[in-house]
Image (cartoon, rainbow, N blue to C red):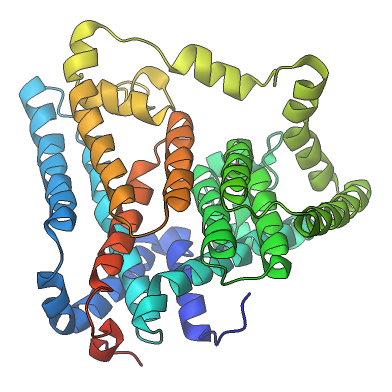
Length: 418
């Protein structure tokens, strides 16, 4: 990346807090270590941060207050409706868990960064952590025996083992185990961060941007094809509005893609998993060129079967159900993020939730191109699955740091860092 000093300890913290290693027989202890360490670090520094927490604007506190309201409703609604389905409580709690990780990582970065570079450096560490994870996936693909050994170390369940053996899923594995939609979110967000750092902040060069963005695209092709489409949209929109699509950029991008394609075709011949992955990821796009349609079962199933108009009562007020009481799958078998919310608590509360999500984007003191990329990413990915509980806390933390950057003193003066 850019010529700047990287702290190895911070880099490792990003890598393993974003994608923690959870050993199957010791999952409780592993999660306790991840969140306990983060909470302890936050508590150690909270006294030092209080002067700045008090100066946070009403907008940030409003977002925080809404999450408390949402948590309360997710408990009250199933009780009033008599469904006693409290599974959605864990979804709202995920906002707090994600916020704790984001706050910890921001605090670590702020301990070694000037006030006006905290968010920028956070983005760079975040991208590098995801690139590391993508490389771990590639290593596991290249060395299947190592992958099988690591699967046993993680005590991966038989269900996930079967999924990883199914068509197109050979690349959905990293050091944390099964890698899917959440990793697609991380890769897409990394593309947005990179495009902003290259086009908006101009803090990374074209030689740094192109290979890193390409690696994140590869990650999306491994973890979820929808991320590839979303990343391409964000990249094209961002580079166009930043006026960065120049001859030099096009040439370097084409050369990087050519090298990647040659490398992939070479691996296809020698590694069956890579060959299967290639066919899985390329078939919808080949279909689009040949027929004008993706002809993809996953996309067709989502659009035709999982997005529908529920009954009026359910549409307006929800059924207070998040999982099916018999099959324990998602209620009404939908993967679409906005549908799950509507089915649980109706369109009104769903609109309020998304309104606060949009508000968190607008609260970030970044340029409108960055906000537009974030918005496009959120809307499209939320159609595929639930995204807001991952991104709402991240955007809110970034907005809070942006607001605090208006103060003269740096947070780093108040941080405890070893």
